[in-house]
Length: 378
Image (cartoon, rainbow, N blue to C red; front, side):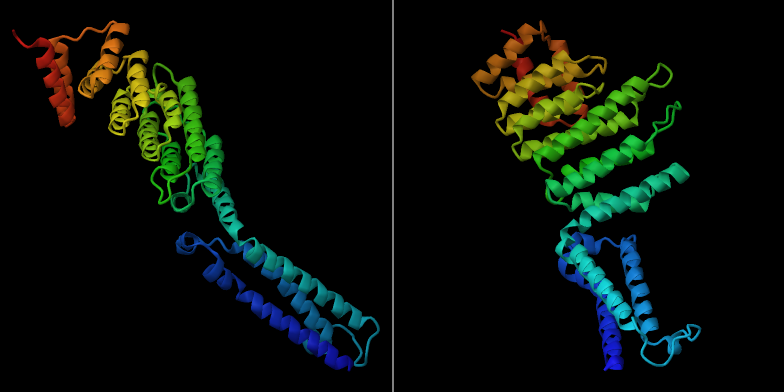
């Protein structure tokens, strides 16, 4: 009976262990989302090995206690029954069974949290590669971008955004003149893709989080800017401008009208962003969101005009207002009067040439119609 009990414990332990070896495959095929199963550039199952190692040690201990003379003849166990040996193997088996239940809970019951664990692993690997080489590992960057694109708007996307924000805060901005902060530019683009280019566009809160990160980056670049190295005019700022524009268009398509003040707040920090303001105002007019369009029109006049094209974009948007109905025409006239802007035939021709070079042909036609209407000869 004593020998049968030991054999039974060993057989059950081996069966449980063999089952656990196939558990990662079971989790991968049944419980993991499709995007996590397709992401295979790196192996993120290393944390499973540590847990299996614990179970392996327990299994070996059970076998050694059950068959000491066969597997570990150095231990001087007598052939007969040893007092306490049955209790020892029972305790080891219960410990293995408890570890198994914990293992199942982590990888089955909490399987939906696997995405967060993978993001955490990627973040640690990226920080490690940055500290060692000064570069972010491109393979891990591709994976975290993949997770951002294929995550659902809300909590899933927020996990990726928070990881990217922590990475951004650990980056050191290179203030050497002529140098680009490629790591920062990559993170800026990945943040944009997570909320604007994903298969399931990010929620309103996700977009707000990304815009807040962009604003912090712009403030840092502005503080670090010098006459010899104006970082606020660098590629990092241009990337934020393009990404903010994409987020604005995505929010307009989803009717997140309350996002526009935040978008304008970010763009107001970027010199030379009147072209993006013009695109946003134009899309808002097409979607009949005139409050947003009027806010854009006001912002284009309130911001600094150092980009030398603000008036061209401003006149282009005024032309769209002028031919969008009597109320919109009245709004355009009030904007011109309040800002003390006087349109002349020469300024309209200049604006028309500017938009023609950008292939904004509908705007070119409207500017020409406006010129003819205001300055036609009697």
